[in-house]
Image (cartoon, rainbow, N blue to C red; front, top):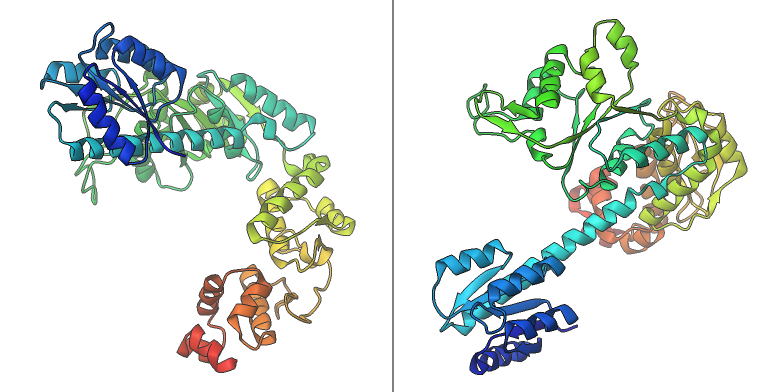
Length: 477
């Protein structure tokens, strides 16, 4: 679809020259000879680019911009002026003009500026689309589960999302604390600003302080340049402090000061930096017990815990298992290109009997593995082995043809790793296809490049490891 350009200039000759230029480039052209008519035309239909003269009868370019920007803030406007008036150009740019050109202008320059402006509009449109996708993905309408506790948690999250209140999310590892934090952010008025995550348990105290607040050049060994911390990066948005219960007392004190004063200094710096950040924190610890043992500051707890949301473990919401399983099957079947219709009742019984110490994260990993191993349209008990040390629920059939599964137990009696199973399965399919990579890739449901990468990764076949996959395939055909 052709881009639409609106040219607003009181000189007919200028309009004609510009109309010829953009018409030859394949654009649809609209014209107006004064600001009022131009504004009416601009508001009546969408235009991808507006070329606007600063000096116009009835309504000048500055007046046009003031009224137009209230309605269409993202449409790029390039100003045209008959004199190099820096003051007018600055005012136009302050009101949202993309750029300006002066008369007499060079047509090549006009084309270059127009193309840059249209590229800028594309970036804005793509950003808006991605933001909309994120908001849709993290909508509270996407909550999976009928368990009363999980429903209550998300109802409360929806109620507080659009406030600035700090939220403390409590729950075991893998219960979905980060997902809830993202949902709160993307359904809030801060959704267009950054969502920044920092794990408080992954870094030692000295590095965590630098991660949170940034540092100045020379603040410590290896501080070769200034670094912006997560608080600054999240300005205007949301900072998610994961596993906040594992912070040291010293870092807790510095965090408390930031929450109280909304100001901090970078490590090794003297400049006071003010920020506007909404805090969502999460922990799998019993914070009240940690306070009683002197491991967590009570005053920080009350700063973080304006609103507390508890997420139940998966073992307490077994009624949600079928819906969660269906969601993950759809997700990974789509990702792997497989047509999987569902799970056998016997396999679901295996899942229902497991205690799920890793909660939803463990369940997702289990279903991902099952989908990868599945050779039919239904996930059978043989493919479902929850837990790192779980006993296999059934003996997986030996390989018996293209696409079948090579899996089983290691010599020590435990289940094989996903990498071991994948390696054996790929090698068996290659052998069955007489090492023809095109046929094997088709059987495996992957492209040939991916198969070649797997052959290199697993060093399948002596000839392949030495001669390379293409030569080896030829030698086997």
